[in-house]
Length: 119
Image 1 (tube, helix red, strand yellow):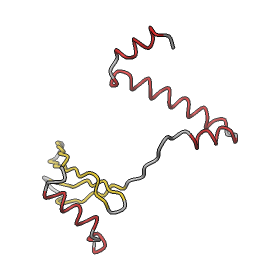
Image 2: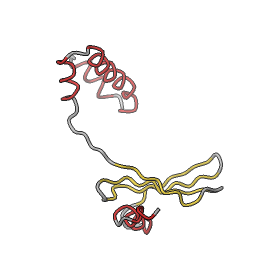
Image 3: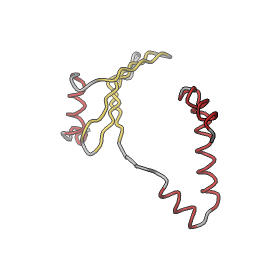
Image 4: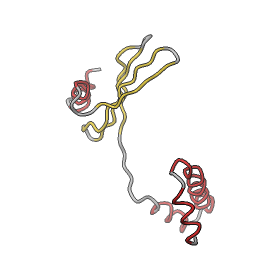
């Protein structure tokens, strides 16, 4: 890639570049998967720089209408993210809660203290 191409790319936002980046990444990975040889499998296995596995639990607080939910992302009993979702028919809104919110405490109770074992 020459400096003119690099300069053009840097002028574009990520939102403008994401489609092309996804296409390039998908073509590269598909090419490796289609090869089905040991070298390709090795390259596929070594491709990720990091792999994180997290769990998401949805707690339905009411079915509605309206309905509300907590979407809790957690790992090994630790709450990482809590999103409150409110839905009424064909309309939905979400708010990401911070650790100081009362419902974050409830999420920690449900996830970290085994409360889900009683359900």
